[in-house]
Length: 206
Image 1 (cartoon, rainbow, N blue to C red):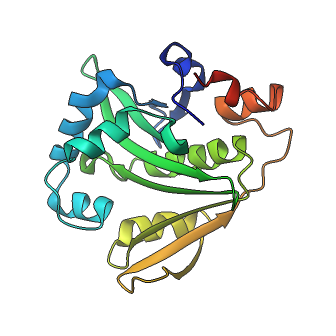
Image 2 (cartoon, rainbow, N blue to C red):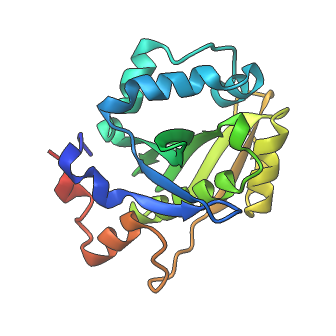
Image 3 (tube, helix red, strand yellow):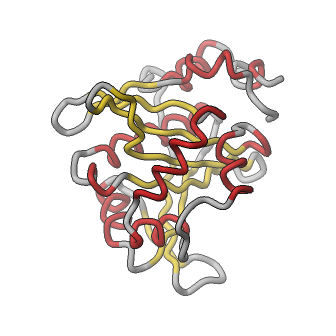
């Protein structure tokens, strides 16, 4: 899938709820988010950045930042979870996922702002990613994380993911889950659009 048209991105946005009922908007990253996204990663604790990138990093390298803000290239997509904080849209989480049509699988990684962990945002975002995966026709979602990343492992375990060794890297563990979304379950915009028309996703490509 090639780059998606920016004027169509809003129809893929979803409004989730934190544990306390606060609105959390999940939307595709846009080029205008570059500065805010970089600041988000800089604001994470050293441990959280290490867990997200599986190694030391103080910020997103320029080339990776470019990849984040240009969605749809090589079937890779980035979303941010935002909340209104003191009257301003604030990034409180992010995720990046890639679809492999040959294996019908989606690989993903995500992070939540340290200040907003424990509010149920990670759980809601993970469920939203599963729905977005279903809209591609994915049969499986998976991710790799450090064996020391207790928070991500606990989140995945509570969400019903199975664990196995990551091929070729003993420091990592892989969590994966089969996707089963019934036709009557329409929990996200991406799934609704795909349900209306099987070509809905590809029709938005330039």
